[in-house]
Length: 425
Image (tube, rainbow, N blue to C red):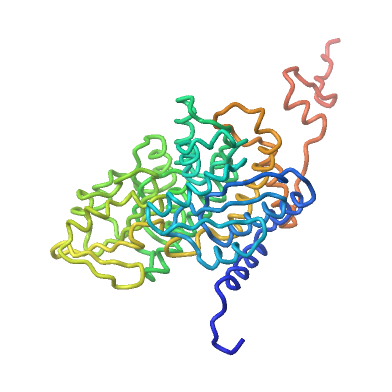
């Protein structure tokens, strides 16, 4: 190829996936296990995730394990086109891309639902919703869900006795909370913020709305970069936790009046609205880290502005009559719209867990009740061991007597602890 000539998009995507796979040693080990067995053979897996290089590594692992995979984006606005092109070249993988509109996205989801997947890997319960509305959910052996929002929706469906297949709540595992939410979101959200603005966080005031696992990570990383951090919460326990973690805690309107940067991470709608816009400082920067672009009321912001203009890529300034407010990435999830999402090292354990959970469901899903189940502890422990092994780390194991002591009701007296005989005997 001549110097300076552009490479085909699929070639760029293959390189991106290969680079991600190099940083995903746990998923590589899991993929090797799946390729040696038949647990995913004859399975059609519907995957609804952000289409990134790391997702490409997961999808290839499933296909190499014998599954036919239908991939649809969980957010059509965060698709990495070169990755989608590369996956379209792969055997046993079909990528369903609609237009980046709500209607186009629904059509892509419906196309996957009509194919009747036997296993589902979901992110936000979007594919589950369409499967149930299309009447094809009864063909599903089991599914996994990787977001807090999705787990809440599926539990609500189960409470109504309308969930038609069992779901493993991958989102609720200790590994998920540590790696994805705290480490992954914490780093990648600030990566997106800094890439778009080149802002110096040291000395600034950063308000984080929501102190779930994602909000904790964002606040922790912002504080580590020298920002004064403010947390806004509706849950008193989480608010107390934020206070004990060293953050200022206050109502949203008070935070809006003080903050230089406001980041939403709640999973709810209309977290920042007209009242907040009226209170914001001149030049305040708004970003969203929630799964959907509904946390910042962008329509109300546009209505309140007398003018708006793009001042940098993905950076839009709104004139509110003598004050300006800056919105990043149109209110879409900042770490995907303005950065590369979670580092591959974070997604390694999460996607390895998705692959193992799908294989486990292929074997055990038909025996489970149609509700949301915790991921078996053995799966999380196995993944943690693989991760330690990949890093060359060894740990101790309990001895037989230690295990018995920790699990027995009966008191255990060690010989060396026998009280001495009385001196007057």
